[in-house]
Length: 349
Image (cartoon, rainbow, N blue to C red; front, top):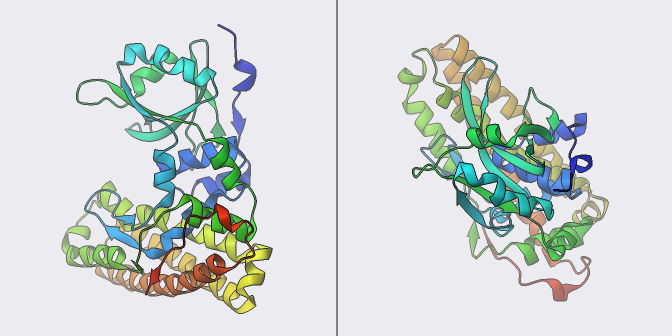
C-alpha cells in the first residue's frame, strides 16, 4: 500500500492552539482539532455561541449539559458510527482514512500517577500499520502521534459484545463553505442555516442552580476527605469546560469588527465585561475547589458556595446580553444573501 507518512507527522501545538484547545471537554477538543487545526475553520468557537440559553442538570460525571447544542447536531451528521471487532479494525478504517476521512474513538491512556482513563481521541490517518492519533491535554501538546495498529486497537474502549466503536468524520464542501469567514454573515449562517433550535426558547440557569443545591446539601460528605475525583471534576472542571467555550465564542463575536459595529460600543463592551466577570468567578471556584480538596474546611465550602452563587448571577447577565445581541445580529440584512437562511429563531425571555 502506498505510504502516506509524509502527510502524518507529529506536530507541536502553538501556545495559542494549546490555550484554546484546553477550554474544551475531550470530545469537543476532538472536534476542535478536526475543524480548526485540520480544516482551518478560524472561528470554530462561534459554534458554541448558542450555549447562552443555559444548561440542564445531570447526576452524571458531567453535571451540566447545554440546553441547546447546534454543534452536536453538526457532529452527528459528519459521518456514520461503526462497531467492529478489534482484530478487524485495520481493514475497517484503512480505506476511509486513505480517502481523507478522520475518525473519533474512546482510547485508554495512562496518567502520570499510573492510573488509566478513557478519553475521546482523533484518528488522523494511517501509514501501513501505524495509526496517527491526536489527544492533547495540559501535559501533552503534540498532535498526530504514531502508535502501532495492534496497540491502538488494544487501547480502544470495548462494548458489551467486545467490539469497539468509532465515528468517521468528514465535512462536506457545503458545510465548510458555511463555516468560513467572519462577521454578521458567519453568525447568521451558523444560527439560521446550520442550527435549527425550535422555539420559543427560554433562558435558564436551572442546571447551575441544581448543581449548587446538590453541592450545598452534601456538605458533610464533601468535607470528609478524600474528596473523590468525580466530585472534584463536578465542582469545577466539568463546569468550566461547558461555560468557557461560550465565553470564547462571545468574546470573539463582540470583538469582530462587523459584529461590534452592528451591536454598538455599549453592547460590545458590556458583553466583554460580563465575560471577564464570569472568568474571574470560574478562577475563584477553582481556587476553593482546590482548597477543599487539600484542606477540607467548612469556611472553604462556604466561600465556594458564595462564589458559585455569584457565578450564576454573572451568567444571567451574560445570557440577557447575548440574547439581545443575537436578535440584533439575526435581524440585520448586513449578513449577505438572505436566501441561504432557513428561518429565524424565536427568543422568549
